[in-house]
Length: 174
Length: 429
Image (cartoon, rainbow over all chains, first blue to last red; front, side, top):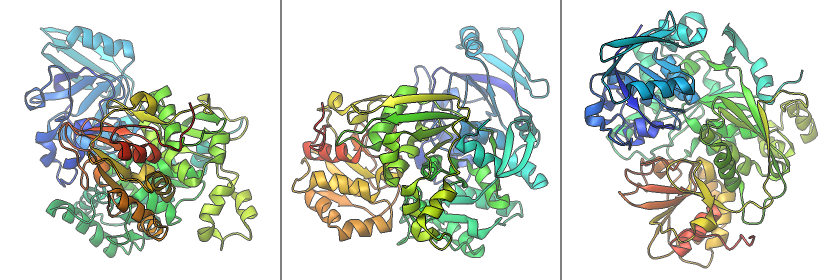
């Protein structure tokens, strides 16, 4: 499995689209690594600077409908090459969510009130997360205090995370 | 209990149900373009699995940036071209024969009612206009589709839209879908199939239905779908006449691809669109929509008519009708991109390209180009485009640029005026 432990980046807006995650002009790149410097470059968000705020992060917590728009898997890849293998949101655009799991990454959906709670308590503070796919829970830590929050993940998505993606899974099975 | 159209397609294409609610579907077609496919091809090669499940079910095109604009896009085209050759993919469309995928593939007869189709492109939902389940996917799903001919989906729930009444003159499918998106929001149909029914849809041409289904993804919809009818049969007839004795027989066969009267929908939403006006977007989300009248006077720098949403012959005819005998404002530049070579030729033969030329437009070859800010009309910082495309995201057509989505009629009228305005075809209030 990929790494699901490390610092959290909070992106406080709904409907962040894949053009914002990685603009189309970089889709001519044919390696994932080449996307790294351009990740989230078109995301206009108060007090967010992709040049400094992405560095060292392992997960994103955001609002609703993350990853809407284009089907480009370059969006998860851009996150992946920056070390971010998990996004937690109220919900995801279908294609983006599937792309994440297809790459063995996590797209965790939590109810609105839980997302609201996480933003209220942790946004703006140095926060770390440790996600345990098997138990369906994560430990979130800030200022020395930790708490455990559970989430639901369907069997298929879990199998993809364990297989580190759909190609490996499908090749064995179909 | 009855089934929805999407449920019927799912139930007839099951390859596996590995988990509760997860369906691995057999695919009738896998569509490919040069932006998302080369990475899948390279990955298959590097895994020693450079195979295709069935070359006759793979359709490939170079459309997003064509002819190539630089070395990187040339390389993407080259990877596609060589892959198509070595796997004997006969339906491969290169320069001279290529066009915007979601206009080209239906035109080639590759879409049929009841089909399952994936493509590494979010606007694949367009093909649901034929009563197919067609969904955009990422590169990994595409890769497995190419290799194994299967793709996984959750069992679909459907929102049924009943579009009632009659559209006013000068109001089109684009206005209708912008209105629908404005009502339910960009997250309003996430994970759902959007089924479009009602007398307004019945009246629509196949081109208009494709415009409608094309933008389902802008509300988060997995696929947009319409029920097949005689218009579907007429459109497909050149490709299916060998399979059926008569159009009536074809219609009888295709008519099974509609939702049962007792099917269970997530929601049924009715809109009477008789008084709908031409619509346009503002802001950076496709659900930020006002009437063109409310947007009247908004200055623009560029007009773009084309794309998988509105680059078909019907769209060009409407725009030409408005442009004929007029010239565009000296303060704007106009770009028209007929979506396929066939549309280009039709527009040429009908004198439509001359109308655009005489009005001051540049006519480009068929390509996705400017729609996603790749080529042929990228905006500069602070510039504004009135566009018949499908996304007004920040930076979509060029960093710092703004896009107002609208119908070809409104775009043509805006080109003449130099600012957003209603077309002369719209007389309603």
